[in-house]
View 1 (tube, rainbow, N blue to C red):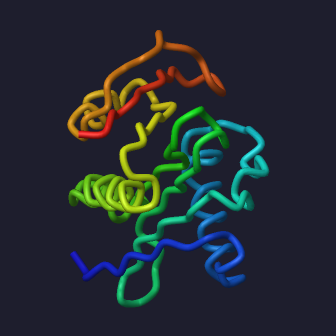
View 2: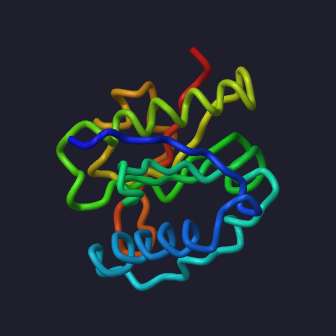
View 3: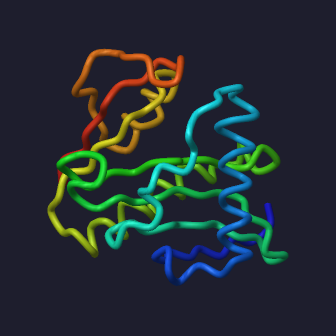
Length: 154
């Protein structure tokens, strides 16, 4: 796999091109690939406590993305959302590195805070491998089974 460069930025620090690329990839994965029409732009991207983490190749191709939301933005705890790896970069372990890097940023910015996610149910084992445990029953969100999972500070 190509070398990957990681960046974490607030909304106001994203370039127009970076914003376009990450929104396009989010729509490609969550709306088109998962055939799930929903309001992708939910107002949380611009929140002062939201961070956008990107994984870029040496050609500046966006390979992976997630957003980190501060306490109180989506859940009482810090949370992760819009976690994705572009189709052509899947199956290479990038998703694990993405989560590990996000957890490191969270530990630095919000030390000791739990992290809660609304995980797609089929990714339960993946998130459990990073210390998340289910804290809700399965529920439908945009016709996809989800569950809330929380990771306590180790």
